[in-house]
Length: 297
Ligand code: HEM
Image: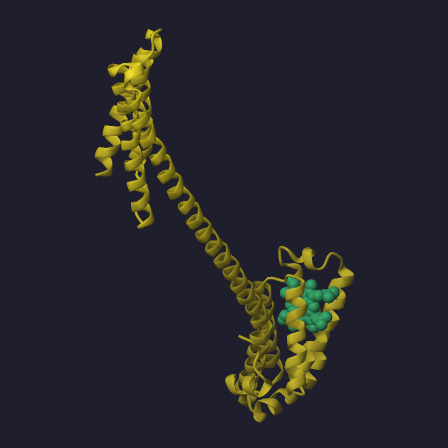
């Protein structure tokens, strides 16, 4: 955003040389009321809930009151030039630096506006009141604009920074996931090759281990190969942007148990308890697989 020059501000708030002379006519009244202003302003600040965060002791509040009085008189005296905007901006920076919330500034400014309007009502002849009030409103709005825009600038800067950081993290994560996906694909291919080799070896050793065991061993490996194809397919679809279905994971578990019970039928010392557990697990997994698959469709 950035702060505009004083002439820009003048144009935006339609602040003219007649406003300047109107304000100068109020200056003597403001001078007479400055002590009351300081007192009332501090009373207003003390009513703010978090005020002690900013002014832990009365001494600091009193010092701020002195600065406020100076600012109050300059509302009417000017001089309204580039130095004036510099001055108000430095106040804004002091507030941002001390973490003063923006709504405290707008609340305080609202108090100032009320005070000035009452002061004009009480001390100025009726015919000139409205134009003096208009000029007062303009200089107050200009101050409000500068005092709050510093807060907004900081906010925007912070947000831009956060967005940049977030973007960087997301880009990094995406690239990292891409690499993981490649590793996964390569692993899947290597494992599939290994299983194919296992099937071939089972069949070649059929003479040594007997037809039944050889075929069952090969069948177990074929089952696993079938799961590998299923997983590879799922991964390809995932790379194309689809979600990974939960049934893929259940399928893997299911086949692992089926294969396990197949292989255990080959072993000489059969353990019936493990076989029963295996069959039971296959049953449960099968039902779950069927239910999940049904839902996914
Ligand atoms: C109309 C509204 C206000 C005006 C015109 C104003 C004016 C000023 C001025 C002139 C300074 C000194 C700046 C400098 O050191 O360069 C200042 C500082 C400060 N103001 Fe305000 N102020 C306003 C409202 C507030 C409010 C509402 C709070 C808190 C609730 C606040 C808290 C502070 C603090 C903590 C400092 C820094 C004091 C230090 O450095 O010791 N101000 N303000």
